[in-house]
Image (cartoon, rainbow, N blue to C red; front, side, top):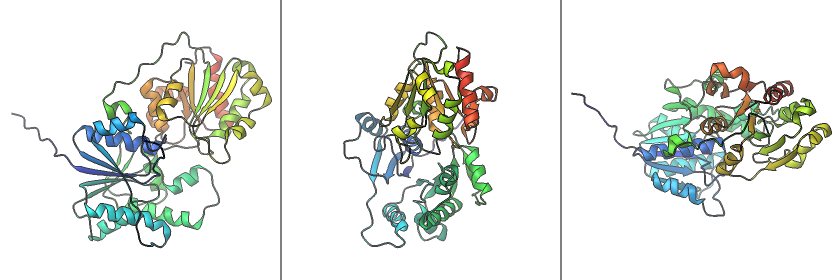
Length: 377
C-alpha cells in the first residue's frame, strides 16, 4: 500500500512592483503573475503585495478573470504614515509592517530594490517572522542592471540600495533564480548565497493557467517577411548593436522585409531616435519600419505570431528572458543573444543557429543566416 502525503495549503505572499494587468509588460511582472496563478490553482492561499503604481484605468478584464479564477488577491502597498530616513527605507518599512500585521507562511520577494530587507533582517535577528519562510526571487538586482547597461555613473543612493539587495539575498532562507547564469554572477560578485540556492525555470502562461499553448499560424513557405526587435528600447536590450548589425546586412537581403520594434520606449531611445540610427541604404531596402511601444503582452505576442515573422532579442545580457519562453511556448521563430541565461533555454544542437554575440558583427551574421537561404523559418 502506497501512502501519498499531500502538502497542506500555505498562505503565500508575493512581494513585487510588477503584475500583469497592473503593469503592461515586463519580465519581473510576467514571472510574478504566472507563479502566483500556478500556486493559486494548486490550492494555496495567494496574495500579491503590489508595490507599483495603481493604473488609472480598470485592470484588463482578462487578467482580472485569471486572478479571480485562481483566487489570487492583489493588495496595493499602503505607505507608512511616519517619516523614514534614509528615504529608500520607507518602502521596506511599509512592507515589513504590512507583513507583520498578519504573517503568511511563505514570502516570495523580488531582489530588485531590496523591498524585503527590513523584514528579512528582523527574521534573521529572531525579532519577528519566526514561522515565515522567506524566498528571494532573483530577476536582476540594481547592480546587475547597471553593469549590464554599461553605465559608469551611479548615484550614491543607488549604491546604498545595491548593498541592501546583496544583504537581503544573503540572509534569505531560500534564493531562487530562473537561470544558473544569475547565480554564477552573484557568486562572482562575492555574494554569500544561502545553502538553499536553487535554479528553477520560469513558469509559462500555459503552465500557470492550464490553457493549451496557441497553435502557430500556418506558414506557406520558409521565407522571412518580417524582423521584429522584441524588447524595451534601451541600451541593455541591445538596440544599438541590433541597428548597427542591420545596417551591415547586404541591402538585397532586406528587400521586401518589414522591420518592426515591439517594446516600450525609454529616455534616449524614442522611436524617432532609434529610426535615425538606420542608414539610408537600409531604410530604402526595407519594405517598411514601424514601432509598437504600447502593446500589452497578449497583443505583442499576437503580432509576433504572424506568419513570416522572426523575433530578434539581442540583449547585451539577460537573466532568463521571458521573451524567449514566450517564443518557445508559441513556436515563434526567434534568434537571441548568446550572453546571459538565454542559452540555457536552447538545445545544444540549436545554439549555433539560434544564438549570436550581441555585437554588430554577431547580429549581422545571424540576420544574414536567417535571410539568405530563403528558408529562415
